[in-house]
Length: 306
Ligand code: CO
Ligand code: CO
Ligand code: CO
Image: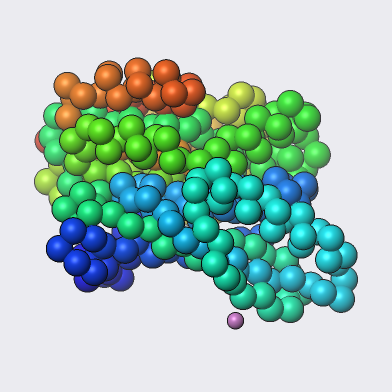
């Protein structure tokens, strides 16, 4: 076993041979958008993401389905599964099975297996002083989803949010593996700062995040000011606030802690490779990728927001 439960990383990694390890992960959740096909795509992109964050290549997947047979039309489930399969085929991943249960609350996701060279596994830990930090997708999916549920998000914003969450981290991961990265994770439920804290907790480095460099979905500041904040986002801030040094508005802090679905990769790599990686990402259509901060010696074990 290379990465197991105690390291609380994105996925488990098990060595099969000298030159081959498998990565295993499972993720499923309740619908976050109204359209079943879109939900299927997002759930699949999200489930695959942990393999990409570890530098692996997903190869097989199995559906995990909870479906209220009595109260919901089966065509909805068919559309969800079609969305999932479309993403898997875009990723070059084979669907090899699955399991469904009758459940009053609809849930969908996948169990994913990937492969990686045992010496090329990228974990959350390993950020070094002097590294730069690259984020590959804009923040705000939690807040915008909340605005959407309240009926306050327009069609265009919903379309942009959906497209962003359904985007695979495949290309970002492949480009990352072309440079000598030190650490990586994907931004999901704990928000940017929550996942950043996991990378430095108990280590002898800290981080500086430049707020003006962090890519954001449009209108998010306005929604945050209106109090359209998911519960998980408040919990994230409460749990980690002792690790944050900042003089920023309440809204901005909540945006940085916003619980994300299928967020981007957050990569720590040598400063000399940072600009080049971001340029390659822009060339490949990952247009929001940006250097958002640095790994520093002080404040140790903390994140300073500037
Ligand atoms: Co993850
Ligand atoms: Co996960
Ligand atoms: Co079964």
